[in-house]
Amino acid sequence: MAEIEKKPVKIVETVLRDAHQSLLATRMSTEQMMPIVEKMDQVGYYAVECWGGATFDSCLRFLKEDPWERLRKLRDGFKNTKLQMLFRGQNILGYNHYADDVVEYFVQKSIANGIDIIRIFDCLNDIRNLETAVKATRKEKGHAQIALCYTLGDAYTLDYWRDIAKRIEDMGADSLCIKDMAGLLTPYAADELVHALKEGTTLPIDLHTHYTSGVASMTYLKAVEAGCDIIDCAMSPLALGTSQPATEVMVETFRGTPYDTGYDLKLLAEIAEYFRPIREEALASGLLNPKVLGVNIKTLQYQVPGGMLSNLVSQLKEAGQEDKYMDVLEEIPRVRKDFGEPPLVTPSSQIVGTQAVMNVISGERYKLVPKESKKIMMGEFGQTVKPFNAEVQKKIIGDATPITCRPADLLEPQLPKFEKECAQWKQQDEDVLSYALFPAVAKDFFQYREAQQTKVDQTAADKDSKAYPV
Ligand code: CO
Image (cartoon, rainbow, N blue to C red):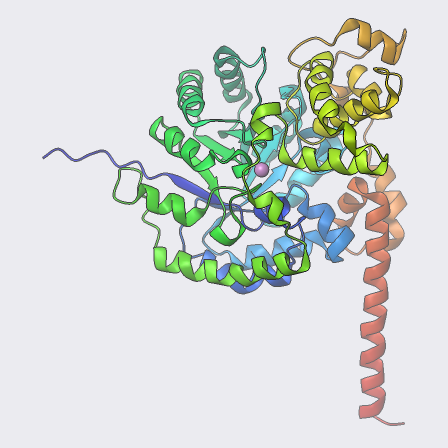
């Protein structure tokens, strides 16, 4: 009997990054992660996504942890598994465009501290905004994965995806990820999409989706059958809802097929046991809202990411206009069209969402215009796949001339300035990068760190004076 060709699907485990970012407001601490790392390291995951995205900000702001220290600890613990991070192109992990020197230095330090794979994306899929990070990753001998934000709209045809996949390969990426942050990719569309991508590129293809709309595990099944090489999953206690499909479920789905991962289910079950109390605790404290665990069909209906929907609710609540929710949902696609039909992902999702709220609340479209809307219309985030609505652009920026080059081409090197500004708190090279991304938050953290160290020194001194009375 002829052997069926084996093509085990590779799994990226997201429980230490996207899963808790999606379900637990990014609040999992390093202390909660470390006890299970040794077991996770035995699974045979293709990679563990454990850094970047919102974890950096959350470490400094809420957990009072040094994100670099977290990375070093994870690197120490994961002796056999590749570590992956999420990197927002020229925004790095922040919300503005940074000069190339900051992007390059961040990549260098990420890899030096233990990252193997850098997943790089741009909220407009403007690949010029990825160039510096991709080049820097390759220079540091890291794996540069380019992620394209998946979205729907007139511009996003199979030809679009096929072409951009080819351009990404030409840029020197090591793999390609389809980043479906809203869970919009349905199973049969995934089949078509993967086939189209495979026509455009020979790069390995990774599919990243969220369970928000309830179709995600079926989407993975169809995608893998179509030739998708890597899927992103989360251990079951922190899977589903706005997170990823469950690792154990996908592993068992493919058991005994050519896509069999060969992972040990008993080991996975032990790892799941470890995370279960973290889920229970989060449910009890309200950190994990049961609402995000169900199927949110509005994401398919309005093509809006789940996180954006909850932001809208709170913005409207603040304005005392919760009854305008449906109006805003209908306004979003209009604003998106006016803004060149970008994917909706941080930060474009916030910009489009906030503008839609303003349009509805003020009763006149583009009467109130936040600074970020102006920036997008000035070309300061890069190029959108479709042109802006010229009339709206004129109303927002008047006679100003928008830029058409890669936005970072206009930025002078920034590191020397950041070095100077944070010199008084600096304890390691990496501190300047924390400061560059989140100046106020990093400063607070540095002061907290110093205070803690003084406390420790004082305690030690007290102890010493007791031990050696003079
Ligand atoms: Co995600």
